[in-house]
Amino acid sequence: MTDVTSSTTVILGAGQAGGETALALRQQGYAGRIVVVGAENHPPYRRPPLSKAFLAGQADAASLLIRPADAYEKANIELRLGATAAGIDRAARTVTLENGETFNYDHLVLATGGRVRRLALPGGDAANVLYLRDIQDAERLRAAISPEKRVVIVGGGYIGLEVAASAVKAGAKVTVLEAAPRLLARVAEADLSAFFEALHRTNGVDIQTGVSVTGFEVAEGHVTAVVAGDRRIEADVVVVGIGLIPNTALAEAAGLPVDNGIVVDEFARTNDPAILAVGDCAHHAHPVLGRRIRLESVPSASEMAKVAASVVVGAPKPIAAAPWFWSDQFDAKLQMAGMTDGHDRVVERRLPDAPGGAAVFMLCYLREGRLVAVASVNRAQEFMAARELVGRGATIDPDKLADPGTPLKDLLAALGSAT
Image (tube, rainbow, N blue to C red; front, side, top):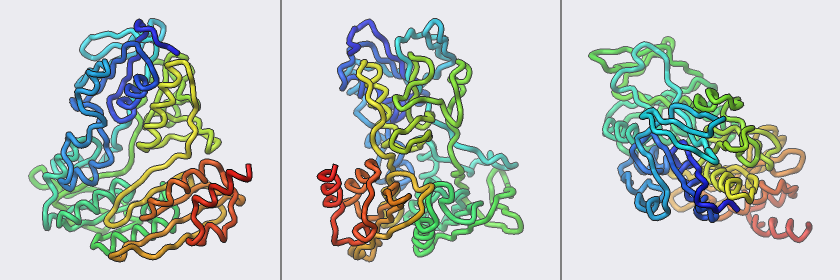
């Protein structure tokens, strides 16, 4: 293990991936210097509640923190907040900040995250066209949404739908415009898309698919209507959620390979042995999936943080778990594990609805008999076993998967006894 106090690890990015990497280093016994550089003035915090509890006013900024601010001081982790890196000198192993400060490093971890993809249309910079990526964005959005406000959301992905649900709960009138033929087209299969479209329609959201925004009507610096071809949708607030662009400029300028993110192996290592990349900015090899992927997922960021820390301390452990994430919308808690692409069969595991009528089911995606992904709605009790089954690439009798009377933990136990 690397435990000499003269060793220095610099982490660029103070989001969830960067913060957890610093903490994982200490948990794994690293005794060297740790410096975390972040552009925001907040200590590392969780972003998922921004579109849910925080937007709804049910959580404050302090509750989002991964650890209390003083935990970093106690762990002898140096936070350089409100600071931005200007460049990396790989030969000298130095990082220079925009304020001129320079740090030497033995290991450099790039946790630079991503930035929102912007809608490049005239009027797109109006005061009431909002995006959601950080606490300041969420605060602006929370202040803008109120009862009877007409909120138009451009983009029917998970962020757009989570904002839609929060806005409806706040009493707003919500319209979602999605360019694809269905919601969640890039991230979910048609059966799950149909469920969430029905859920949102039932709760009063106006869903319009196959609709591309072509312009804005603007008066006195504010958008008054969104134009989509021959459609005109009046708006008090416009929220754009059309994806994330990984922040790779520093890596590119340093000559590191970039392809839809910073290219790393299953140990989060770039082709420079002193530089690693984790989180939303990393395009990594995933042993469970057997291919490369860039995941915008908190669990993925957390696992990659531990993997990177293991490399730095000299006891490398590769990514080992199936990728997973979650989304909360109205009364539906979605948890997904694995990747559905390439599946050739879907098995539905339907269970009695929860009190109040909330749907409870699990969709199991198979490829050549192997379980490659699950989508669980309001079935958190079974999800952990399902995630483990996906991670092991289990071959399971579809009839048993479909039978809610056969616990998944029993299928998992049987798999263990058979190996």
